[in-house]
Length: 108
Ligand code: T46
Image (cartoon, rainbow, N blue to C red; front, side):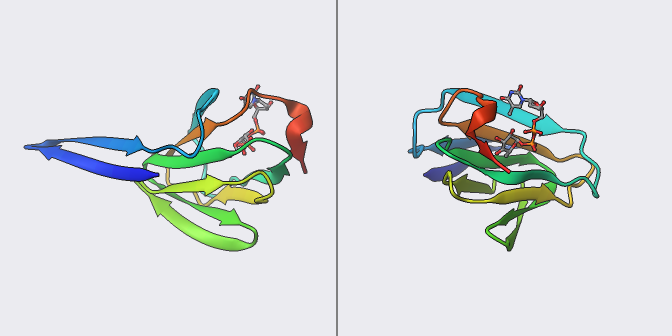
């Protein structure tokens, strides 16, 4: 995966390309509190790319904390048990998913 930030005077355009899979679903979350803890699962089949569009947060993948801020991304394989926490008030987390939503794909 490749990230490029194109700057033009006061604006910028962020490009993510060479995606590791063809997304079938895109969702994003916002409005989380610092002490909210999301995720706490792994998947059977679903691969995902988490992109911090705004603000910052911490993603724990297999017990390792990674602090991400604007334009940072993390690729999650199905077996990557993950949690999302320590959200800034303005955090927006965008997720590209390789599969349609299926509640039976979750291992909690
Ligand atoms: C993941 C992390 C990174 C749907 O109906 N459709 C959807 O596509 C999604 C993603 C969720 N939902 C429903 C299911 C729950 O009733 O939205 C509610 C909140 O979902 P959940 O508690 O799973 O949210 P998170 O933030 O814990 O996890 C989400 C994804 O569900 C999960 O696949 O890996 O973000």
